[in-house]
Image 1: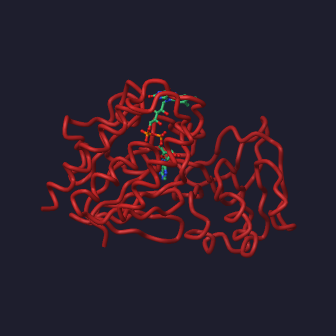
Image 2: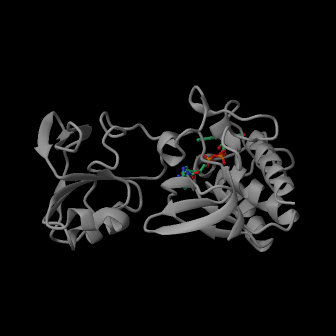
Length: 276
Ligand SMILES: Cc1cc2nc3c(=O)[nH]c(=O)nc-3n(C[C@H](O)[C@H](O)[C@H](O)COP(=O)(O)OP(=O)(O)OC[C@H]3O[C@@H](n4cnc5c(N)ncnc54)[C@H](O)[C@@H]3O)c2cc1C
């Protein structure tokens, strides 16, 4: 059991991990290194390192966190479940348990397809490894918007009667999978998935699997209070869910590295204080 799980491997996440280690807490950063900072060619306003590239800064933060004993695990957290003082984070078919959670998920929220939220668990799934058995011998669609899509589609093709993959062709895809260049627009169904609407056409499926780089916060942690598009926090970075903190771009403007690392630090110290 970890003391602290950090969701998101950007500057807020690494700063939270560094400061959690300074308080001698076990900490794991979950997520693929990258995010927004990796795209910045040159950062002029980060104190002490004028002109550093986003990639360099992120690599240095990562190295510092890992060298201090933080762990990192790639992957997308699908859901945070409150088990009464302990949290279970689902990652594909696996779980990570932690006593405190810090959300550092950035500002980029995925846009859900119309119908997706309503039909989640009723034909819409974010995890092939968890739900493939429910679709044994059935026809499913894969909406590919994240790095896990190819391997998950391949796994689905071992159990499902037919898999249609909505995304860029990839040589690693199993030959049984049909690749479609139609653009997913909505999910249709009353109480259960009936079809994926793509490029204006209703295509019948028993299930729709969606794989993205990030999760919508409403699916990641249902009940989390928001302030518009951002997570509501107080000055100690507590969210509305006891034991869950948030830091960085996901809590609001300004979307800046200095603010992200500052909030990551506060969130980790607040979480460590509760674990005393
Ligand atoms: C082109 C560009 C230039 C910029 N230039 C500057 C600049 O000069 N100065 C400056 O201060 N700022 C700059 N910024 C902004 C800066 O990059 C952000 O403010 C900063 O990266 C925010 O850090 P963060 O850790 O909060 O979020 P992010 O860096 O966005 O990291 C969040 C990470 O969490 C991941 N994630 C989300 N959900 C999940 C999940 N469920 N499971 C696992 N992982 C998840 C995301 O994929 C992402 O990798 C720039 C941004 C861009 C795009």
